[in-house]
Image 1 (tube, rainbow, N blue to C red):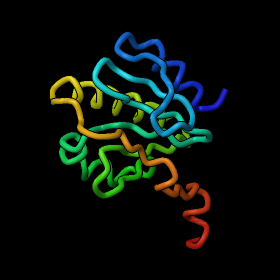
Image 2 (image 1 turned 90 degrees about the horizontal axis):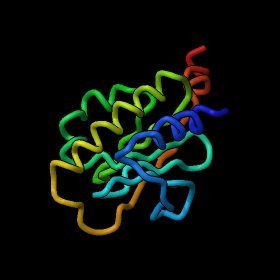
Image 3 (image 1 turned 135 degrees about the vertical axis):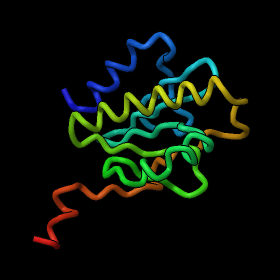
Image 4 (image 1 turned 180 degrees about the vertical axis):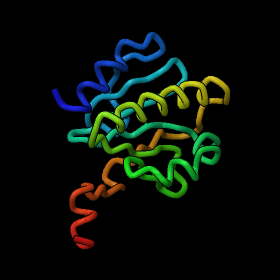
Length: 131
């Protein structure tokens, strides 16, 4: 079982989330009563609808994570699942996203996840030039 499959299995057990087709058309989505929350795309990348206020609040911490990719102006973050710690991070961020969506008004316009807008360099390749 891949890390993404394990993460999906864990999140499908959460009562606040239900399985759905993603608005981007690729993979599988989990949604709350308020919004799409998570898109599991083929491979190791998971897009998380964190909301603008939550991204602003945790921006510095998110930017420091090697698993998280941020796109300017996007309400979504991409989490690259490379190890169990990344799955744990995803679980924590999904909790933040659920709370953020419950606290604020529904987002206007299409969800617009980061699919095909983020390039993730595998950690082994990242450190290769520094050999």
